[in-house]
Length: 136
Image 1 (spheres, rainbow, N blue to C red):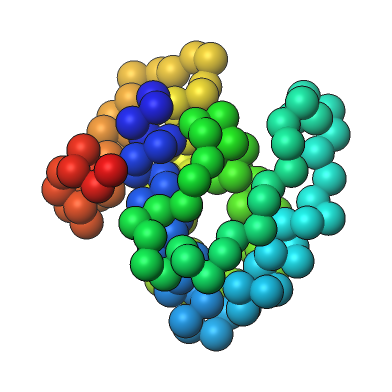
Image 2: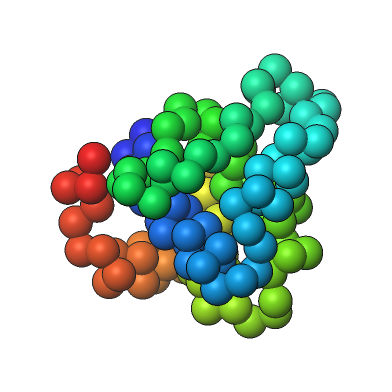
């Protein structure tokens, strides 16, 4: 699972966020402002709030987060900035796939149909980047 969180998710989210910023959906400053006040209550309250993302994200291959932090980040990103992204944005659609895979990975029970859907999503994801093990 760490490969998914610390590899696929970090790599994809960096590129998705950069394209959303470059596409004018929001600025890095607005994104960081959305992170700061995000409330962490209930079962997630033991996590630290997210640190602002610096401009160095442009030159780095990813940004630094632990597997548990990236799982939380992927899960709540749509709540944090979803209202800033226009409907049917191609880069936001790319966020949806790892988000759905995350839900499947963390699901306590899986049906056979769910496993087949997960396999299909993984094929779509790896078609974009054939070997995620080389990105770290």
